[in-house]
Image (cartoon, rainbow, N blue to C red; front, side, top):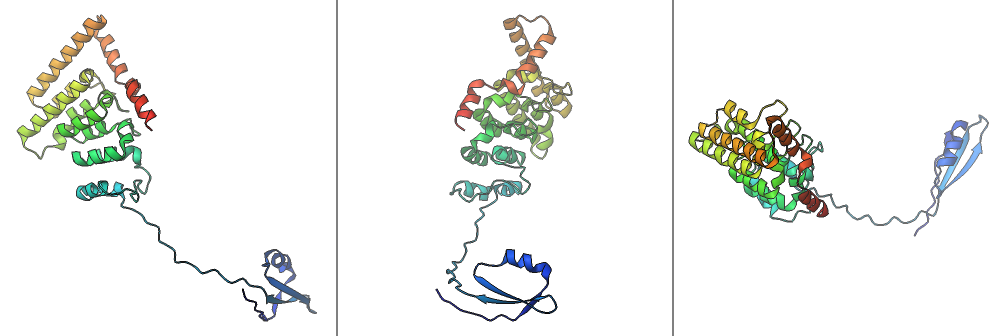
Length: 289
């Protein structure tokens, strides 16, 4: 501690500022006020008992880790793989607009056609995203199908959350709708024969996981078979989808005793709504939250 006294140069102030000065004066400053002939005041301050300032430690700049959202947008897969294999304390997930969060980080990766290894790494760290529908009612498998995902990606997403394979999004589309509508468009740069083979395998995976989805109509009253025909899918794919459609209809008709196609159509609509998600799966994901 030290004490020092400084004589301040007289300062002229008006009456209007007296109250302000009285309210704002510091407790360590003594003010002496003398009024002169003009009605103004002469203030003499003496600074006394000023405490010794504590030493200021250099501030540590706040660390911001790699922005995973931006890395995915730029498709920097090798860097993302290294990041996922390292400590994640400094990873920043949310983008500047707040549109991408932990709940939809896998959706974003699927929209950029991330490799299977990246999806596996993200699923280990942000598994809740697999069970979360985005603002369009889409699960990761919907987004992947919309962007022409191949059989390896679709198989991984089905194994991660099989119930989502038969769910309709806000447009009334299941993942099978999107594969039939978009697969050939998004993979037109690949070998034609290989492209149709991959589409066939992907369609087969989705029908096996959600058999009734082959007959579901979207909000435009289009079913996956109609989209496949419109997209120019191979005749073999169309034929197998038609077989699956007939088999599914006959099996349900026999089991449920339906006599009219309209009854079956209504059943499909009900079963493919988001509320039909497997209750056990939902309860498990909620309990693990």
